[in-house]
Image 1 (cartoon, rainbow, N blue to C red):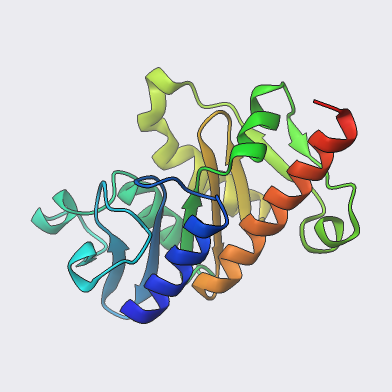
Image 2: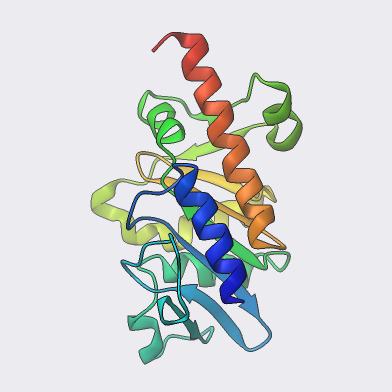
Length: 183
């Protein structure tokens, strides 16, 4: 498990999808969730950087990512979810701050993999509501990816790599859109 966390974390960091201490990831096991610890860099993850938690809050949650409740609620509401990534991809965040409500890729790869990705406007001073809004949105729309305005991207799949593919495709499409706009 740690090898796959390290591989995906390194890919996210080296691709610029996260900075030195942002982003998080988790993988659902039969009896709980493996999740990165709060404040840990996704680059060169080690075993001590990941914690196994239960689906109900207990003391182990204190070490988990600050986004732990979003991860757990996605798993509870979306039975297809087995792996979740959260990235702070710059170009995607820029589009969200420019007033886009939806990112519709104009490139072939992006349009093939993503169709369109919605942007949720969750006020920073009310971020605690994201633990309900994001999982509920993913359940209702049956989409596997969503952007939180000014914050970042949440994606789930059956593998960590599958979630990375979605986030990576979105970031590449966002760069293309910004390039075409000339900003």
